[in-house]
Image (cartoon, rainbow, N blue to C red; front, side, top):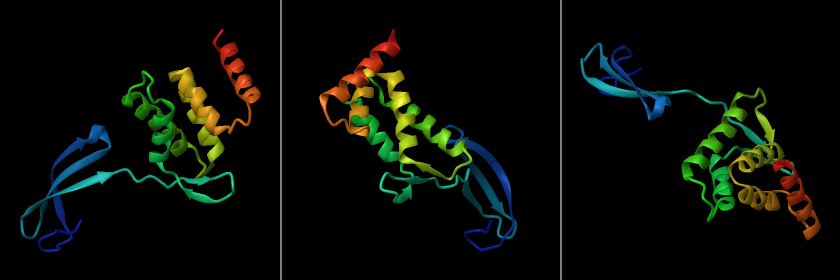
Length: 152
């Protein structure tokens, strides 16, 4: 770690603390040459996940898109933002822990629907209607019938 003051390459760690709920580590360092102190942050490096869309194009996984989808589905429903954040965190963890660096948008949509089904049935149906692109009322009714049979 280079000193930001004198560019010397050796420093010692004076203090370490966990920040952001354990996501980052804050390290207070002291330069071995000029004795000035500076702060560094250490984070776990995550490999990028590439999403293969329905049209076969590829793009990096964007957590914000998933959060936005959840927010739309849960609009005017009694679902807290914390619940949405935890659900998206869980989905992201599943994707990061899999050995695949490329994942289909279909897989992400299925994971999202599983989470929404457990959170709020109305939000689930909203999300499913957009995600599965219901063409008519019969397709919509089939999904509602499945949902009702799963609950009993």
